[in-house]
Each structure stands twice: as C-alpha cells, then as structure tokens.
Image 1: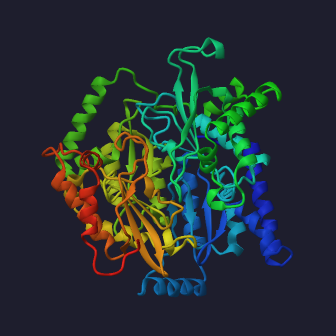
Image 2 (image 1 turned 45 degrees about the vertical axis):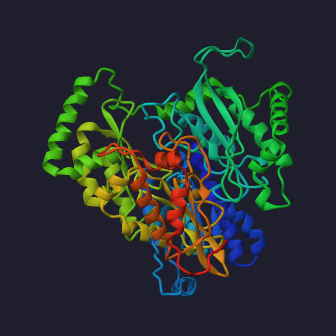
Image 3 (image 1 turned 90 degrees about the vertical axis):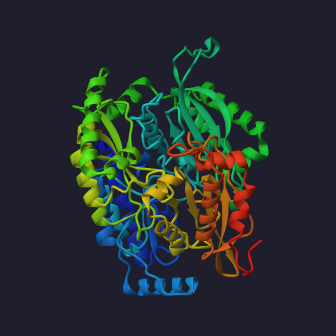
Length: 611
C-alpha cells in the first residue's frame, strides 16, 4: 500500500491545524455558521438529521491495521453524542416509526465508496479527531462538497487472477492530482471516479461520473504512437444514479496511460464550464453528457488538444513519477509469486479438505464463499463478513475493528481493504493459513459464509441519520436479515444482489441491485419502491443497467413479504437442479419481470399505496 512521505504527512497535519483554527473561530463566534459551513464540508464534516457526521477518506479502500485501530479509537471515544442529543434523536425517530426505537452510538460505518463514516461525533471535538486521523496519515479532505471525491477501485486490485493491469498506482496518482485541485474545488456537483484493471468490472465503472478501464492495446496505432501491448485506458463519462439513472458513455476506446491526467483535466474542465448550477438535480455531469451528446465529447477532445499542444502537456505523467508510485505496490517481501505451484496448491487443497472433515461443512462453505482466487498461486484473498443479525450492513463496532486489525496483522501483513459491498477483505493470506484464519474469523464473528448471498446486502444509513432520506433503510435490512438466517436456504437461493437506499440519491445503489429497495415519502410516512433486474456490471450481473420498478410503493411492513414473494417465484420458475440451478438474475432475464411483479404486488393489503 502507499506510504506517506514527509511532504504528504506534513500536508495532512497542516490541514488538521488549519481546521482547528477554523473550528475555534466558529466556537467563539468569530466565524458565522454560513462562513464555517464550506470549511467543515471540505474536511468531511456534515450536519445530519440529529448530529454531525464525519466521512473519513480511505483511498481505493486500502487501510492498514494501524489505521483501523485508530478508527476504532475514534468510534469508542468520540462517536458519543450528549444525552440531550441522543434523547432528541430517539424521540424524533419514534415519531417517524410510530414506536420506540434504539439508536446505537460508538461505531463506524463502511460505505459503498470504500470510506468509513461516524454519525455522532460532537462538532466541538472534531479538531481532536482530525489530529488523531493525521497521526496515521488519514483525513476527511474532499469526502464532501462539489469536488472530486474518493477514487474507488476493485477490492481485488493488484491481486485478481483476471487482472490486466494493476490499477492501484494509477488510483494513487489520481488521488494526488485531484486533492485540493484549485480549478475543481467548486464544481457544479460532486464528482466520482472509479478505476478497474481486470477483465471483470468489479468497480461498477459504468455507474460513475468517470469510469476508467485499464487495458492493453490489441493491435497498436502507429498514427498515435501506440504499440501493441501498450497500457492505456478506456474512458467512460456520464454515469450515475439518483433521480435519473444513466449508464456512462464510452468517449475514448484507448488513451495512453501517461495522458490520463491531461484527459481528465479536459473532462472536468468542460463540465465545470457548462454543467448546470441553477438546479442541483440537473447539475451532475450525466445530465450534461446526456443533453449534449457528441457535442460534449468534441469539446473534451478540443480541450485535451489545447492542454497537450498549447499548454505543453503539463499533466503528462513522467515514467519516473509512475515508477516512484509503483514501488509502493510491488509484492511484499516473502510473498512473491510462485509460477510453478501446481503440486504446492494440490497439497494445500488436500490439507484444506482434511480440516473441512474435522470442522464439518461450515469450513468448506466458508472456503467456497469467503475465500477468493489470487494471482499469486500461494495466496488467497479472504472476505471478513460484517453482515450479521442485530447490526446494520456496513456497521462495525470498535471491538470488531480491533479484532479485524489483529487478524490482518497475523494473516495479511497488516493490510485490509474496505469493499464496495461494505465488508472487509484480507488481500495477502497464505493458503496454508486458511484453517487458522477460519478459526480466528469464527471466534471474532467474521466467518459468516454469506458473501454474495441475499444477506450480504448493501444499505445506506437512511432516515435514521441522513436528513436527505425519505425513509429508514436499516430496519428493512435488519428484517430481511433476520428472516433469512438459514445458510442452506440462502445457498439454495444463490447469488443475489440486494441493495437498499433511503432516498433517491441512491447511496445504497438500489438501481444496480438484482433487487432494489428505495425509500420514498408519502405524507410524512415511510413507503418503499421495489425494483428488479438492476446490474452493477459484474460478471454475475451482466452489462450495467438500472432496475425497473414493480409497481406502486409498499409500506414498511409489506416490504419483507414482497421480497419473499419475489424469491418464492424465482424458486418456482428457475431451471436446473441440485447445485446447478440458474441464478435469480438469469431467471429474471429469461422469463421477464411480469411474474415477479405479480408476486410482489399480491402481498398488498387494502392500505392506500403510493402511485
């Protein structure tokens, strides 16, 4: 992983000191709230429904065990509201839910953008938290506001067997380029970039403002000075969710890797110039690209040519700079690849099977679900599931973070990844350590073998915390989790992407779920739309597409029954037998949505539904 040098470290510490001065001036009245607001937002501090929320940047999801321990400390010591604030929240949520509810404090929340959030830190303690983050090379810079946000990538970046080019060095270069970029600090709206370096899209690049696919030139192009095998990017622009879900448009089939900053400069510069600022719902780049089409693409190309030919290509990446960054991502000592490891792996598999016989079917199921192939034949990547009954998707306690850090030190050279699916991944696990890791994960509560299954769902914090949300997403997630706890039943249902958002902003990515649930408002009450057939672009889901609404909205009490009706219909209509049943998404594509819509709509009571 990338390690800060003295410049990086000093930069973050100075930023924390600057924020402390701003906070002190706000607390003693020298700064008014309207003056302080953009300053705190630029450092990741929101004011949510009941309390401040901090979003901490975790570039492309990579976090060290040392950093995770500090994140645990912040949850334990600082994510604690005053009794008055907590009581106000409990009263407010009880009014919304029509009953008393529990409001949990003292934890972190992993997001779909591979960051971590806290929901209860008092603003007067925020500068202390920024200092603590800076002590381990972390911050909240550009996790909020109309700027370029966290660069995300595949959680298997650098280790996936199907990887064409390792995206991590490019993600790091993009992070450094975009951080406090003076021209792009006040864009029309927030701006998100995702990078993939593998054959399979595990970074949902078609759903981003800019998606970048690393590849190698298949034939070369002498007119562009491109040789066969050269590394470059396929560039996609204008994807996004929200009120208007749009799949990104490919605007460059191949761009030489060293030109990516100049080309991104052109993309964002044209957006900054022409993006709408009169309507925040129409301010995203997807609206500009959809409205202007080829005209937008032509203007990007013209701006790119000006940057290269008139400005002297100031952002062309020198080979020496790429090499400097790449050194941070070279294989760790002692875990270099083993090209002739067939016998070695065969022996390890035999040992795994022996342990499976001792530990019963649970270990075999865990290996099948939570253990992933690795480009190094001696290694595996392992997902630590944080999805469990009584805990919302993505939520993690201080104790769990500390246990995960301990496991990472013992089994993964102190490195973890926060995944798009709101779990933790260990990237450097030795094959022969799998039995020991299984036992450690089971003891720590991370060994649920549900990765890719229904209960491995995505959900945003929703109306329990977010003042933009129309409905609570977490109670729906918990109800479905409780209903589907039988692993045999989950395995029988197979791989299903269930995504839940509390509002149309789509932080829970409901558009891309095989099954999506969206919170909507009806006369101050919580109602939910259900969508079917969405895809994030991964191999199991197929080409990226937004799901379709099944009909009028459901009450909170009806949603779990509607989901169960959809799943029952799948079991009735699927083809195959035994372990070879076709997947839910494949059945849906084959027979169409109508039987599933009818099943969902059949659960309605006589309560009036939202059209």
